Length: 117
Image: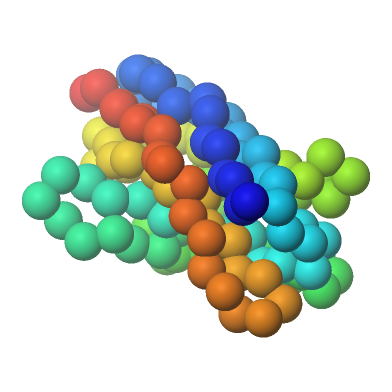
């Protein structure tokens, strides 16, 4: 059974930092692309960052480049999102996504990030 469990969300002031974690199980984590998405109220879910299974390749949305860093620990089956210089517009529910070697998609339940001005 596939599980993606996010943690680390919360309330932070603008300019602050948070670190999200996503603990994965039930699939081959090291061979899977791991991503973070977010969804603000009334808006569509949007891509934030990805970490690809091969090498250290990563990809970021323009809106978070230079502020957010995605990383992964394949030994712990965990992916992280370090978020610095947070802005009120970063307020959203953040979701962990996995795409395994068969291109199957899995989603976590989300963790709320609220940035106050």
